[in-house]
Length: 160
Image (cartoon, rainbow, N blue to C red; front, side, top):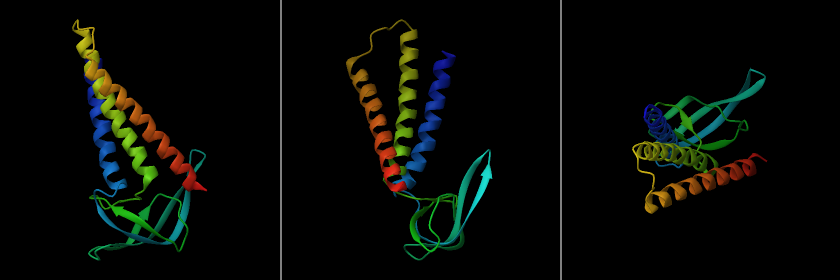
């Protein structure tokens, strides 16, 4: 029972966290605008290198101008990219790869929560899972994998 409750909590936290990022990546939340990339630098940690690009962010409606905007994404200096400013003042780059990736993680969180509820239900002597619940879980698992695949392919295609 404790394991099921723990998985339910983990699933809920993962779904909430990923859904928040999905909303920004899909352009459903935040303040849309553009970043004019002024400079990029790289930092190293643990044998890996990570990009940090800086520039001026201007919201589409002109209400926000942030001359110190930064995003941890590899971008070309001098380019202008579309970004969403989050409620915390950070930035997310919207698009299909990010949207599909965050959607897959959101679905994984929901899937984990459903499986924990199913495990708790089965622990109390009910062994037969209703067909509608099996269909929901199967559909959710399938769409999670499809979202991850589409996001991965779109991300790789955009990397070249």
